[in-house]
Length: 318
Image 1 (tube, rainbow, N blue to C red):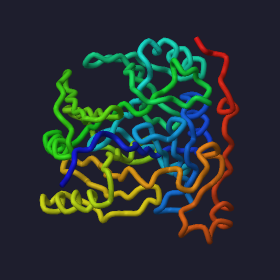
Image 2 (image 1 turned 90 degrees about the vertical axis):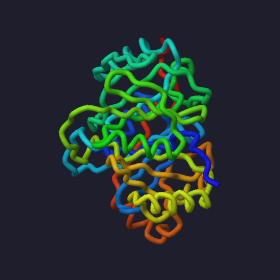
Image 3 (image 1 turned 90 degrees about the horizontal axis):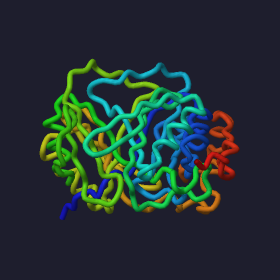
């Protein structure tokens, strides 16, 4: 029997330069690089996974670096922003930290939340939302615990048909939680990474490229559930992929009628099946079927260096 998703599994964005992406997400935002691997559809491109110290589901933000691709354009149908949860009372710290690093941040509010909105080096829109979550931050990171990112808070979607997108969210177990202007909130029932906001507004059509959010993935318990979801979406004539083995989880992809790409991902086997958690992210790991081509793959990928800030806390503990 199908069970409601407890929330977001991960969010994936398309970025430009891999080193700039790493420097920003680790050195500035204080996320941990929890997995350095490759895109299963193109093993000559990185797939970088960031999260809290353990890479807990609901904290994971992943990036595909495409250094030679043109920039994307926000519009319909697209995920237009990813928000991260930070502790209440920490936004002044983050405003100063971002400013010190040359990042302009805008203070915004919606519902009962305050947030900072800004862009990463690729032009991807990110937000820090003051919203306490019961997830431990990366204890070894450059940001003091009392200010550190707790994980994903949610995503903002701009569909072509928000009513159709809302229907799919409802099917997955998200519940209507209210409206603030042209923003309609849906929330899953878990304890973290539960928010999807739908924007009901006029906008130009999007162009996918560097700076675009590629998809949001939601959590399902296992492969058997994926099969049931696959059959349900096919019965409803919703565009759904076959189940794919992503080594750390199994996934299927739903292009819902509003145009947003939603992935359904299993909670296992997990990110620690091929690395010691203590040294995760420090070296390139490949899916088993790509190991025989390791020398060729490593020769084509650019080298990456963890920023110095990842080795310990900075002194800006405001």
